[in-house]
Length: 306
Picture (cartoon, rainbow, N blue to C red):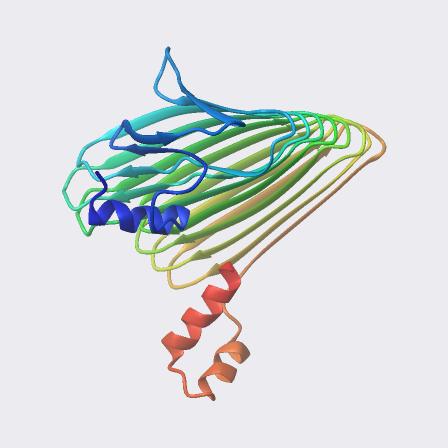
């Protein structure tokens, strides 16, 4: 049974107000508590380690899979290994993410290792949201690792969002792109108080005419720290673009380290990084409309993080 707290967490990380339609697997405190499969999407429990295999049949279109994780058990460290087989020519939405409610003094932690195989001509949109709440003194820790291989003419679109309440995170994303494969990444991350966040994104453009666009936006407030390592490696005729934009406030620290490496004369790779504070003219403009400085800041930050 889902408690009121569980329902709040599901709404935050997966926009779910009730049990979803279609395929889903809901994991709570280290155990699967609810599952549904469809004619085209199967979900199978792994036998050798905690986690599931999600198998999407070739040609599946317009279907979705929800695999949220919720934690509310003080002191729990949950590790899960999920493997996704995105069948040839399919087009699907996968909604994941983890929500933690920690009202105690011990840390709660979730480490999710997700492997994706996007087969020829398939398209996958993957949405992952992380959120923490509870008011306890224990830390909320989330460490996602995402491994993706995109075959010829495949597309992987990722939205990776850290909403609030995550005290410590290390986010590792590794992608291999084959011929004419495409990657689109949108990362949004918010830290405050003494939170720490590290994001490492490595993309290997192996195939001819493969392409990648990686855009990361973040806000660091109070005494929080953020580190971004973004690396594109071009091994063939390819195109790639990294963009990392951060707003820094108070006593926060942000390091953005974009890197591009070309191993082919027709590799076209670009990187950009910008760190700065909120522009004063933006604040003044909103304050002339009757907003306080804090209200104006919140509107700007919300718009920046999208």
